[in-house]
Length: 260
Image (tube, rainbow, N blue to C red):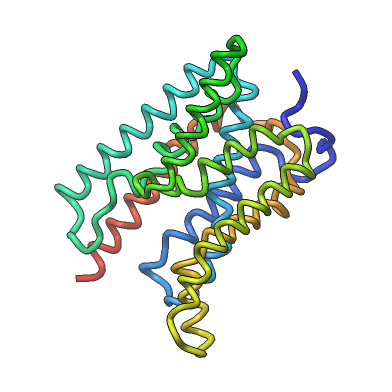
């Protein structure tokens, strides 16, 4: 089987290191309760690579896995478990001001549907069925515009682009850039419509209303990623699955206890 992205064996970051880097950035994005608003804005912009970074790893994982069915089942199961955990945290633990969104604070569900989109596109059916399944894949990407799942607006098209272009790095990066321009066309006018020349207020508005465009920072980050399994890949298989919900629940719990 060909390497998911070709000619990258000399790069610095293996899969384990890449995951840990993304997890570290993820924490920076979620500690806004405890830092100044403008520092939180900075973190919010530079951490737009996290969701698409894990989305990239999911598409790559679907390429290598022995069973896509098991892969989908694992993502879906963790998505359901986290939704249940978020609900129970809101019901019994967190105060209303620090409650979690059942689906909005749950990247597992987004990655699960994104993985379905990739599998529908990359199907091995006969030509007629292939076209039908690919049409369903595109329809799901379009449905992702509705803000039901966390980041679906950007993650669904990103995952489909990654699948279609994975053997051509230049084409992949240009497609990411095209997606960024589409998002910027939608988001930047909203961010710049606040009617002020105050640079800090403009920066804050961009961070809050046009941050999705900064997912493009994944391109320079991927230039350092070699696509190789790390030494402890199997042992660390479930680290992200545990870390993601636990760190979010802990942050919301601390905020709920500290700020009364």
